Length: 294
Image (cartoon, rainbow, N blue to C red; front, side):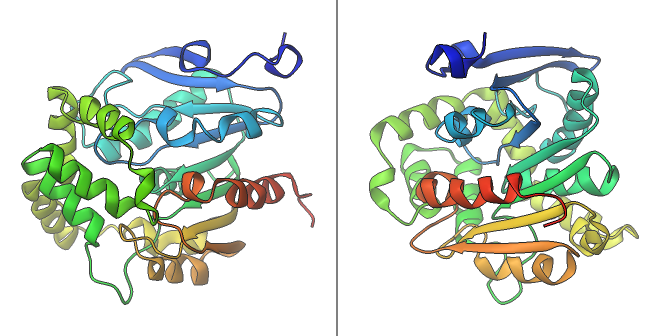
């Protein structure tokens, strides 16, 4: 019996699932029936897929089989010793293989958008449509890293509640969204020793320096230099007031992705799916349900 017929509220507990893989258990949330829709979360202190997308799940579950994957290294799925970005890319392939899914639509927030784009580049027939929320591309006119990334590094190096609150405020346009409940749930997850160690592999000062050195020495192009090969029809969504990944980052993917649309939301920071929930859901639903030849 489906959620739609019983009108059972979607909760953390009744949507949580597990998938055993050869690299540990991947945990995810599942709701709804229909074409598969994979939702990939971003990074940052205390993040989970459920926290990124729990507010959007009821609407999309009415039309899609929604699968919110929890990336390794963020305190929900089993951890790995890999860099979180590498672990996330591998997890997507293992997850889709494990569920026997040959073709999906993907929504990715920030880091999740990058991972989704990488998955679509690596296996073009597997991703039908791609929706990104900030993060994809690279800074063109704005300083890099952005304000939010610098605050994230400061928290990762020396985690305090004050630094967490500063970072959370950089994520939103409306400061009233940073509630005590939000601070507390993020604090508990972000200060878990294993989760914090994983975050330092990605956002610590030493990690940034090592990544820069590796990129300078590598002959492999960065993912954003390959976006011209992306075959999936793509919708880029962005908050006009994003202080984590400023909106000028959208310029490169907007120009280079062959079949791309861009929707920029006013009075909105990095969490477009939360801060402009109804407008964002309307735009994304229209994009995902439009006929392929339209």
